[in-house]
Image (cartoon, rainbow, N blue to C red; front, side, top):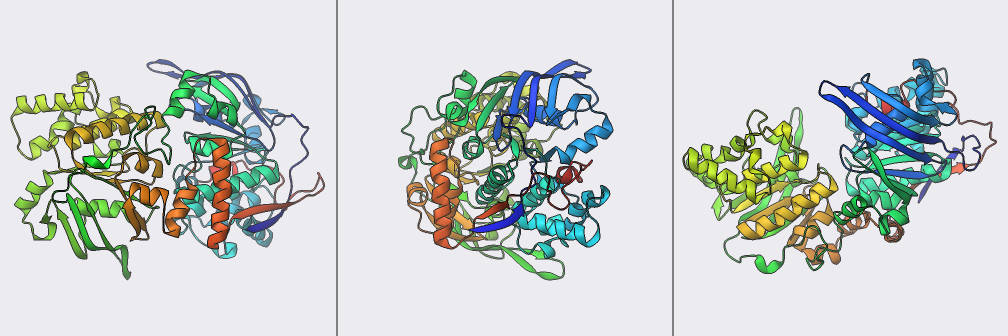
Length: 606
């Protein structure tokens, strides 16, 4: 375990004093269609060294609440009630006061670090900018402080990283940079808005370890905004649940996650996929596993033999994204393809669809070799394949009404007449549990879950024998995800299609898949039945993935975290942890005095 020496710079806080307090907060947005009541009188506190998780689905008011604490609401917002950070009432501050507040008293870590960092400035420029702007450090002192911050958050070779640009770092490293910028002015409270959503499960676990260390060693209060109940169980001391602008339940993490009182909280927790429960035996599960007896032993729907895929780069050797991959998807079988970002999952899915070529090896769809087919034969084969992409908003033509979007494959393949196509579309709307009245609606009029149901309906229009689903539920709220997975399972049993299901969520794979293929850096490290891979993994990489996946139960997650740390020690991996040397209350870390009007790292280019 690696520990990092820093000096505690937190000023003493009277026990019980909240560093962030919302009192009867109400936020209303005036629009041309009338008032929108986004937050309806919530009261909530965050104390030093405490993590309070604010959970709820999209549109519940979580992000509006958090941005109120930073004074970042748009001009059409009307705010009543009180928001206090330390001894400052946020709603009473003028622009100058807000600039001093951001960074010095409260800082923010956003969901997507790539948009929170300026792509044309080096990491060093962005870390030193606020220090120099406010006279906290200049020249070599600012650079030394920036390197210290990177070292604090566990980034190796900090002096070299200072000269790099955001795109040269991994997603986890970029998020660490954003956290370093957030703590650079020693804020009393950090607001972390979905800080791990865009990260792989192993990187997520590392970032949670880092945030936990900040909380424990620097006595920083953290308001954690997330929809991931596993992350809540791993991090939170207390939990507050929001629903349509109301705070419907709050309590300790143990109370809320193990004995919820409000019906909405119960539904939210019931919808969470749980690793290890993918047996289809639990009647309360929202989505049930597909059992192996449904698999047909006929001609495989998809066969990959020694597949190699490369991307050419100007002036550089080709990048090998997929290296010697071989596996099959049987007729009527769901195969889960898992791995971290950059492992080659989506590349394999695109190759299976014929969207990108292979350098070598063979791709056989329903016993037909892609490379040997004419354009006419390829079009005929593609009629037997369906695809569901991750983001339905990007994959459905925004100018097509729902009926036209679902019917598009029928038009492309010249199947039926207008009347029969309409009948087929209405049947599919029934199948994906959408009202027939949606036929003439446009995608922007639908929710994310409804758009994904349209995407699935379109994929099934031609009754495909193989479906390729690339992260089809990762952009959805947990209850919406559960409903879509439940529907997907029913449709698979009804239509009997085979499926290559690409996902980074092991609990979702556990619900659906008969077999699992694990990828790392473009190569298969392990494959087998669901139980073989997810219950008795043989490879260290698979063990790391499984150990990093959080579960929505505080007691169980604490044990899993301890088990993960033991596994990492056994495998020789390091767990980065902050070590804080106590200092007099009036002593500050170099460069930590004052405030950053840009709100530290969260507001650079964000």
